[in-house]
Image (cartoon, rainbow, N blue to C red):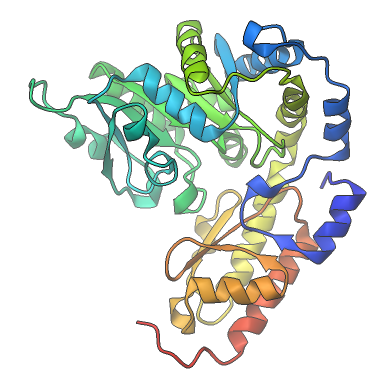
Length: 363
């Protein structure tokens, strides 16, 4: 764990498992931010932003990259570049682009999501193909296929590389582009013991977050061809994402990109430890063998409590988590929570669920 002493003190008080977005920049990141060489990035003159973009493109084996304020903006930019108004975007029903981005593909890009549920959130070509619209003038045309790796709402599940390759091969044969919401793609790469370049090479564009498991305070990256990134640059400006002396943020992103992936295995080990401990608690439904990365989602229906009630009780014990629906709770491990924090979380869950359930019955 690479927290500052102030963060370590905070970690003894609160164990924040709501998301890996809550990570705080390390002391080394803060120094890099303070010392960053900067310029006006709208003019393309910020050397630190330029280095970040060049390094991201290199790591992913792509021609170019673009630093954007958020993953949601990155996904929206990709949708705008690859589609035109009235198109449909095929995505998994619980995908982030469908559930957690404020319907921006409709409100801003003029597209409609075309969704289907998929086992473990993994879209295969057999599920995608029936969603492609016929080439008839009165149908909204399919404009894009969007995949999510790892899949957030399915517990950080990882796409088998063969599935990604198969989807891309068939999509390209059908004249469709494939965008990858790879917010946590480095987690997927660590779980698969492969490089991010290897597991994303067939996708036409990739967005990944610096501000989740990699621990940077702000920012995401889009990678793709030079032509795609040129168009993405225009879309970023149109959306208000032109940042000026952004090198102060890019400096932390560079450090996150270079240093953080080598530590992600610890977050995965802690998630597995958490899942195995939760699975032993009466009333919790969870298959720990499905926990591949840093997200643990478990069901508390059999405890007689709702997820919101359970999270509220955990909050009183300074363990922070979040409900994903009425009976499901998500906990996410990250660099600011160590094994002791996970043990504290498990102890708190045991104490809460060993007490009498609320008197009111929950159907």
